[in-house]
Length: 295
Image (tube, rainbow, N blue to C red; front, side, top):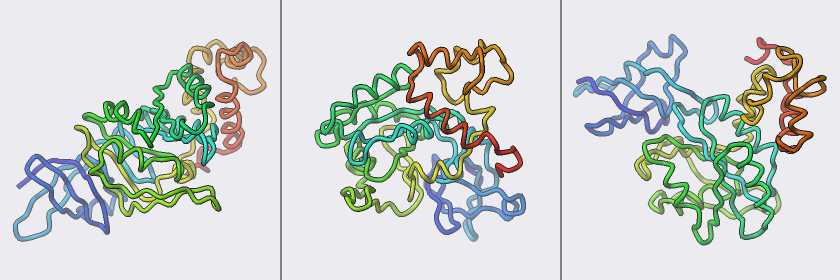
């Protein structure tokens, strides 16, 4: 019997595919190995269900996006979770994750946690709202804000990213306690949290799916996803109204160029200085990398 479904879990070379008729354990056909294609959690696939042999994945349908690490496909929304304090907010890390989401055509939603500990969160909400992003303020102790996150999950594959200790698991437990994701208190010594998620899996939640993976941290994504200098300006959505008005349209780096409309917008307070500083740092890191060196 042939069926279609969604890979909701991958572990040890086995893939668990959810279909309208049930959940099936499958192996990938050898042809995928020959073509160096690895099925990913989030893939929409066609499978053969065999009574007397292993069930097999026969076809992987076209992906709209994918991440290398964590290995996930077809993500609709990336909730980028950042605590205001303990650990302290790092806008460069936050902006990197936003840029990667934009590059991958994943909708970023920014979630600020631990807002009860520091009222400075208001200035960050203002910065990212003005840049055109959905921002949600959450207090994981009271659960406020979690319903707003939950309302965005329906009919979507969503992932939650951010460094350990920022409150991702506490937020997910507030959204749906049945997820029972383990949470750990922040390690004061390391300034990082302890997280005990063991394998890559999609959980059903609020009419959609939530991805939870081991080591889904900002650092993992940053290491594996590089945005080249010519692509980077398009990953800062507030630049869109200005990049085509630069004097040297095709060669403007938006760093030290004369007649740069982006820099002019920064100087006039239209584009956030902190967002622009993140762009400059990211640009300088990749400006000398050739396309063939990216591999």
